[in-house]
Length: 194
Length: 195
Image 1 (cartoon, one colour):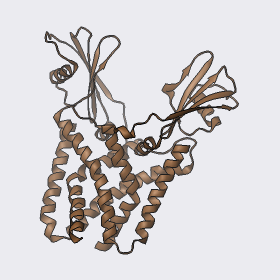
Image 2: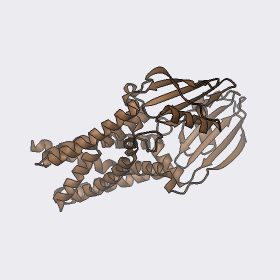
Image 3: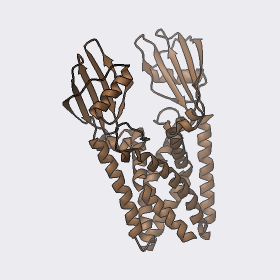
Image 4: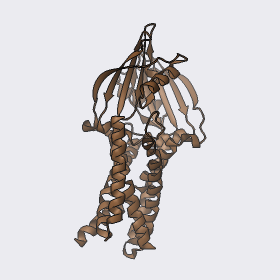
C-alpha cells in the first residue's frame, strides 16, 4: 500500500512537473517583475486581403475580421479606435499581440504583429484557462491539464502526510511543525481578511 | 550518498509542512478563479462617505496614504496612489473581499472614501492576487509567505525529481511520464509562439 502511494505521489509529481515550474516561477515574476522575463518583443507588419464583413457593432466586426484573417486570440474591446475613415482593433494571446487597421473599408488590411517571446508565453500559461478563439484543440486542452494539477497537488499533500506517518522516528516533530505551520498560516490569512 | 538522500528527503518533507497551507490555498483560489461561473457571484456593494479634513502639516503621498488609512480605519494593504487630471489624488487600499479608494481634493480639505465589498468569489480572488511589498507589515508577511510557497513549489519539483531518481529502480515509466509532460508543455508553448 505504502509503495503504491509513493509511486502515485512521485508519478503525479512527474506528470505535473512543467506546470509546477511554470506556476512557481511565473507567480514569483508577477510579484517581482524579473528583468530577464520582461520583453517588448519584435513587431512585424504584413497585409492581407479579405472580404470586409458587414458592420453590426464594434465587437462583432472585430471578431469577424479576426476570424477572416485566421488570427488566434481574444479581441480587446478597449483597444478599438475608429473615425470616419478608419477602424482599428487589437487581438491578443500569451504569445502575440496584433493590431489590425482598416482604411476606408478597403479590402487590404494592415496587421502589426508583435511576437512577445518565450517568457511571455511561459508566464501566460499560468493563468491561461483555455477557450481561446481560433486555436488548435491542443492549446485549449491546457485547461484540463491545469485542473489535473490541482487534483495532483491536493493528492500529493494528503498522500505525502500518509507516507510520512509511517516513519515513527520523525512523527512527533513532524506533526508539531505541520500543525504549528498550518495554524500560523491560517491565522495570517484570517488576519489579512478580517 | 545515503546522507544526501536523507537531506533531500527532509528538505522535501519539511518545506511541504511549513508552506502547505499557502500552496493549497494558492492552487484552490486559482482553480476557483478559473471556474468563476461555477460559484455564485454578485456585484460588489459600494459605500461612499465624504469627510472634511483640517490638516496644516505638509505630507508626501506615502504619509498621506498612511494618515488616511489610519483616519478611516482601513484594514487593508496600501496600494500605489494616482494623481488625477483634476488635481485630486486617489489612494487605494486592497484586501481579500474589499477595495477602498480615498480621493483627496486638490486643496486637500476634503476626502471621499469609497469602499467596495465583494462576494465570496471576489474574496477568494483577492487572496490569490494579493501581491507587492510595502503595503503594511501584515500584508508584507502574507506576501512573503506567498513568495515562500512559490519558491517551495520549485524546491518540491527539484527535490521530488531527485527522490524519484533515487527511490524507483525501474525508471522507464517515470521517464515516459516526465518526457510526455515536458513535450506536451513545449508543444503548447510552440503553438502559442507561432499561432
